[in-house]
Length: 305
Ligand SMILES: [Mn+2]
Image (cartoon, rainbow, N blue to C red; front, side):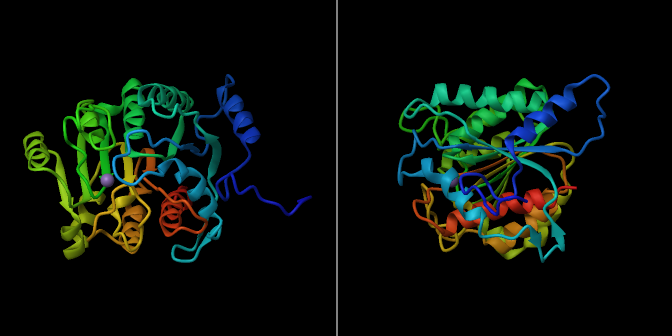
């Protein structure tokens, strides 16, 4: 090492973008080996155009990257060192105030990663961005076999919110219309009666935060039994506001970070084809919500073979 420096605008322990480009080129050459280690690319999406209560998720990517430096490369709990092919590619260009254009740019970028066999990891930004992830998976013809594992205080299943079809509050309804194999909602504790009826009618599985707090083993069994590819989408408001206060819609009686750590231990060893961590609205250094969001990404990366 020539210089003892780090770049706080890049996620901790991520490798250089130039190495990503070299790796992608080498993978695409004729005769390239197929049995290389999986590759993970992180994208920040600083968009908060449909936010309805507390604004600020546009600051999420910067906050979560900054907070990632609070952690070690070595994980004492699991006795593992981060050793993955993990690249922070920077932020996707967003068009503030225009969800449709932002969604198309994000979907194209994710689609490009998927076509190169790279697993996309997103830091939001608001939850509406997950629609771009789901659309990209659909374009690659794998969505019909995907289980969407959705951590959130809210069902996000309303058909339209204040007349808007595309919103952070409707995102799971739009994703359900893309017909994934299965949707499992975890930590939910806020929905309209209409949303609950819709979920029941469509066979969408949901486990409230109270259920998780009462019997975590039941939830661990549900997650352990998932087969096939998983799209994991985590709204930071699934946590209790005592552990993640800086979110667009704080909701009391949430889950705790030690529970999420156990869930990540199970999920990270499955076939997660896409991950997003959304709704972090931190606006200061060392914000607890950013710290917990960074931990989710680091835990996931650390647990990859
Ligand atoms: Mn939510």
